[in-house]
Image 1: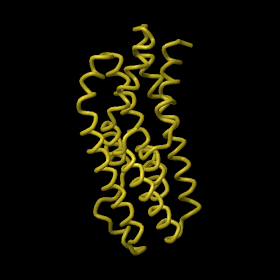
Image 2: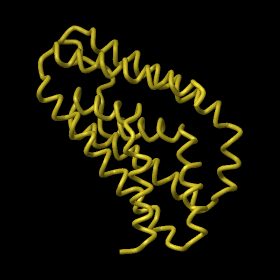
Image 3: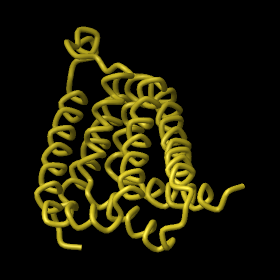
Amino acid sequence: MSAAFLAGVTAGYGVALPMGAIGVLIAGLSARTSLRVGAAAGLGAATADGVFAAIAVAGGAAVAGVIAPIAAPLRWVAALVLLVIAALTARAAFRKPGAAAVDKHPATPWRAYAGVLGLTLLNPATIVYFAALVLGRGGEGGGVLFVTGVFLASASWQLVIAGGGSLVGRWLTGPRGRAATALVSSLVIAYLAVRLLLPA
């Protein structure tokens, strides 16, 4: 197996394994809707990781240098979006049981994919992470294999998260269980959004 591919797999798991706001969002979507929606959201996050890895392979330090000055504003935007998601999730927890059936904007796999892809792309730290790894490899070849490894590793972990959320959703099928899941998810997402704004 190619060293570049294995390096990509390692890098992909390195960025995907820590359970952050995106992971909570994916698990929550699976728990409240379906595995298909959660899996699509997970693939959106994995696609963003693949895009960042590809940009890092193509641009390396130059890209990281361009991203650095706008990292703080992007963190604020990401935190604001997460707080809005937390508020909407909390609102869903207090809806009457029949309200979900008349939701004007039901979650679909495509909407989940696009939404999580966009939200994950707001994290500038990821591209800096991949750029540092690419530079650390000393410009070795195998860029396509590296990016493929990153995507497959990230996708496999995101699908595990989605599957876990779906399993929890099956256990908590009643209105109270769904409401509790939504409320806990919203609180965790809000906490992680605030943490984005705190100094490292």
